[in-house]
Length: 164
Length: 422
Image (cartoon, rainbow over all chains, first blue to last red; front, side, top):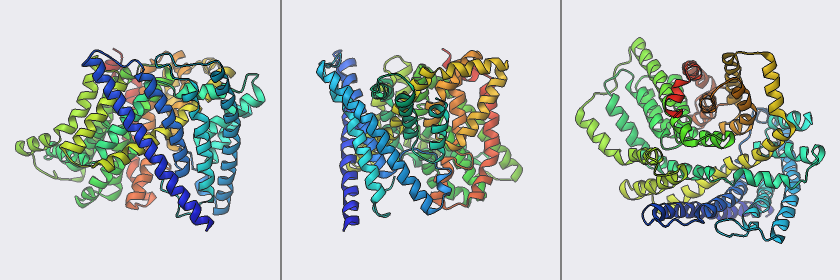
């Protein structure tokens, strides 16, 4: 029962996150192309386009990192770990997950502290006037997704995890 | 401090932990236990690492390349290159090199090129009488060239890390990429002549014309990207965005290779690939800050300076280091971690940073197919179940060939700077 719930959660999360990322990618293309047309055809560039695209990419990167964690696809040097016996490999995966939770947890706490500060002073972006907490929030949210993805993958039945 | 800078990252890397986690763990340990700075610097350096307009071209180039390569484009390019070199001995192996080089001008992913060219060309190569190790060697080594031919993700990352012009790096990569392809072609031709391999096809102007027309739309993409950038019309990021729209129109409407559902899936995968790379960029931002704060690059420069090495010796030592590292670490991680350390050393030795960017990229491209852990080898192994020993035997001659090309690229700066120095 628990195993099928985890398998369902992994499939559902993969579909939802992939959909979000695809939408972000196509939105980036639309804004970039629209801005090129506005700039070179109508001589009326959208000044906020660069910021809008950069912040969308920042969100795409950290939400995408959650999906990569869920798929176990982060780039790593698996020279030694690939040679380990099954049990040692499993122990190493648990140790990696614990380290990830601790390190991302520490950074996330300080991220929230920083976001709190820039929200209090009302910092906004220069061209678009976007409150700066919006792009900065991508880091703690992405870290939460990465932790969730890593933990789900740790408890997943082998055939449940989507391919990296 | 040594523990945070060297021992912890090395141990975690060897244990197989994700590269971004290794870098972030070391920097976090440095901030919490060693440095006397507010820990919010971790967040600021990570955000600063990815909030860059220049890096925005990465998702666009990845997406455009994936759209073009996932469709039937590669088959058209194979047909085109074969039509051009059909009468030459070893033409099918030459077509593999040519196809990889052309695909490199559209997509910066060596592994994707290995999979695409492997599926299309490995079985015909074997049917044509090439041994399986040789055929696998041609495919794996040719795909390595993709990283050097612009647009190159590795060069964008180097440009941002080393604060060098990305358009200049792209220009600088063209001749070295062609040099690698020429060395490969010369070896294949010599092998074909010595082994008595006959021409696998014939040349006819009509066939060459038909094949050219058939893939004209595909060849238009690099023309638009490079024409736009070097005509002074677009920035690389704008050119990459236009490449995406062009690739979508060609694949959806002209060639009808993919549908909207497939396009949506490719878009999601392109952004996931971007995340895979950029999360390391973010962590490398913190790691780079830690190295700078601790004065590591300056200490390394002072140490190397004390050895009193000639510039050619410095370059030789760095080439050997990069070749060794390239065997076990992917180009993205190697560039982001090593550039802040190596660039001050080569600058001190009087090497042009653009030239060094190309040397680094070529080294790491060779690492893509160098045993025991070159990524292209794993792609071929998983696709065709080729035994490891055969793969290793197959790529060895091509490693020697590309190392010879690397020596030329390293010690003849004009090859990179002829175009890239302007």
